[in-house]
Amino acid sequence: MSKNLVSFLIVVVFLTGCQSNVKSTEKSQPIEEVEITQPAPDSASINKVAESERSTTLKTPSPKPAKTPTAFEQLTQRLIEQGETALTAKRLLTPVDDNANLYFQAALGRDPGNFKAIQGITAIVDVYTQWAWQAAKNHDYKQAKRYLDSARSVNPEDPAIVEMASRVTDLKARRELAVREPKSTSQLQKSKQVTPQEPEPLKEDQFLLPKTLFSLSEDEIIEKIQPIIDDVAKADRPLVIYWPNDKEARLIYQIINSRVPEFRVRAMTYHRADYMVELQQD
Image 1 (cartoon, rainbow, N blue to C red):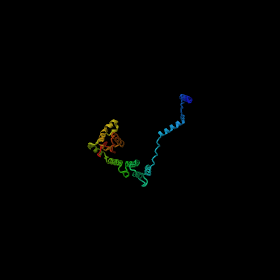
Image 2 (cartoon, rainbow, N blue to C red; image 1 turned 60 degrees about the vertical axis):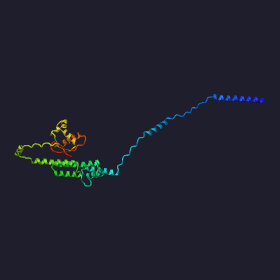
Image 3 (cartoon, helix red, strand yellow; image 1 turned 180 degrees about the vertical axis):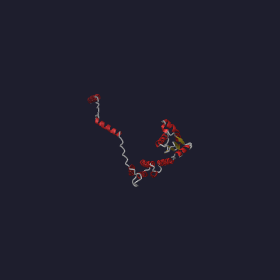
Image 4 (spheres, helix red, strand yellow; image 1 turned 90 degrees about the vertical axis):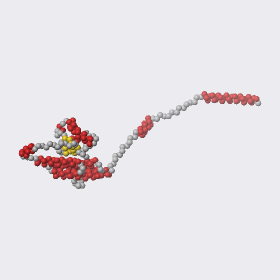
């Protein structure tokens, strides 16, 4: 029995040695590291991604579609065009069913404040007032009155009608006065002996300008008109310009108006040789 025990111990020792040898061998072997690599993306894929991102971030807004005029607006525009055609053909108030005033007034009634309709009506008044002036210069005052009446039927509030009526009346009066002047020598001598009346003194709001105003330098012209400019700027009152030359009268107004930037100066011009500007009450 002791032999069996000894044999058993020898086997145990042997097996223990083999097991430790196996463990040391396993510990001594290095573990290989495996590197996992992914394939690099090709250039085509990169370009597609970049284009996709660019198209997403740089989307341009699509243009808004043009506004289609409504049937109401189309009809108003058609009336304006018919009015302009009739105005060019000088069909101002006749025929009754096909004239410029009819079309422009209809357009203005549909669209109050329509700029082209207002322009057309103003143009009709301008034509009639110019015709009235030509008739007056030809001594046909009745025809001039008829033209002015036609202008009033288009727009009775247009200030150009009042101005032209005054010019026609003034022209007629001056011609009649010239006819009544004495012709004989004796009458001329008597008229020379008459002591001329002194001109009435100017009122507070009247400004007399020299007849040779526009033969002066620009600085001198401004100096003469400056007191008028100052008073107009203070009070915002309308002007009346009495001047025999229409072009010079409008130039006086433009000078005054351009130097009063706070508001538009209101003015009327009369074709009279008074060489005066007057401030009126509102």
